[in-house]
Length: 148
Image (cartoon, rainbow, N blue to C red; front, side):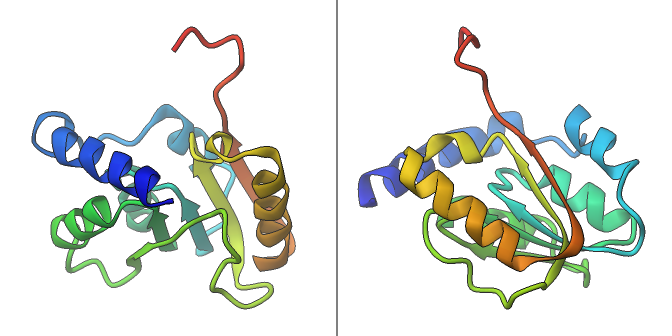
């Protein structure tokens, strides 16, 4: 586990200066059009935080999480002052530290496909647990056919 965290921390240190953008992903823009406002959103694997900031700016309360302590610390600094945007270090392979039915939406852009099968199944059970009845799950995963 510490090797994985070290890998992501190193990756985010390298990316911080060169690839920061405030432009939300196309996936975030597409999902935002389908989310009622205001909603409580849990983002799993927020990376540089631009999607979380975009969703928060649209009136949602967003808990943006990532495995990397480095990127969470950077996001807290970069997006400070937004009262409805919260960043937290979280391992999505572990039980989620939120009560049952806390969120209207769970959003995961390219984060759920990194886990082995048993942890993926656990993560989806946890997602189901923290979603409110009729909650929405938006997730994007890489395909096995993706050359990257």
